[in-house]
Length: 85
Image 1 (cartoon, rainbow, N blue to C red):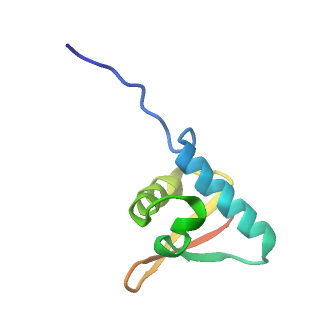
Image 2: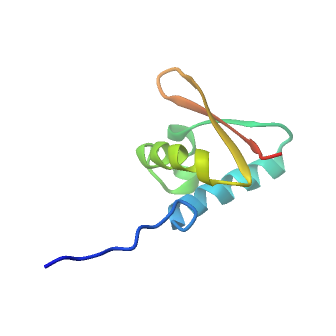
């Protein structure tokens, strides 16, 4: 018996969409780029730091409206998020 599941892209994922919306709102509230660590925003987006890290990697290539870049690593990955220009 085989089951075929339709793969969901990060943009279709509700978790990914929640993260994208969070970044858009934060970018609107402040000027400039965001520098975030998953462990510090986990409660804000109701995701685990591990989920955020996995989504960030996927969103780097698929979130057209955002520019996401792995910035540095000090006890956890820091991500730079900016509006895509």
